[in-house]
Image (cartoon, rainbow, N blue to C red; front, side):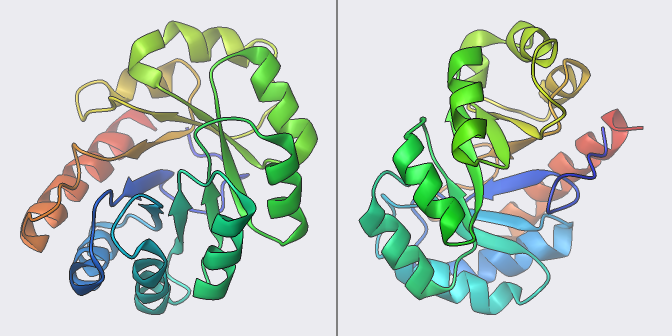
Length: 207
């Protein structure tokens, strides 16, 4: 399932929902050590833009860092000021996607239907985020793949080490993982161990 269109490899996005600026660097370093090289910090996290800036500095050129739950131009402004490059949306807002594309961001747009997927691609999204994946199951990406062009499709929402392979087999390029990977207050060592398990699962099912 190695997808040459993806800007990161393996195609696993770590969602650090609820992370704080004083904790973010340690967890980013743990993720980098495990081989995860795409970091998403949701805009609902405390002082999220500061965390993005710290994550960007920690990543350097080793990983793509940015924000999730990007819903408005103000989020793009703050993300750009923080140096983030990755924009992840939960839905399709063509005007926002076009603006993000014009600013040079890498965009993963949240979709759940073929109509939304094509609207997101038309607006300029480079990747699609199937969300919430666990609600629909692997049957949906399998069906979408029959009509979509060969664009990266990430499964997001309810992805675990145990079901990741099912989504990869159904045509997903990778996944974004939140609560199964990171929860606020956990030790960086736990983040490392969780990330290593997901990377190993991806490698096992991508051969």
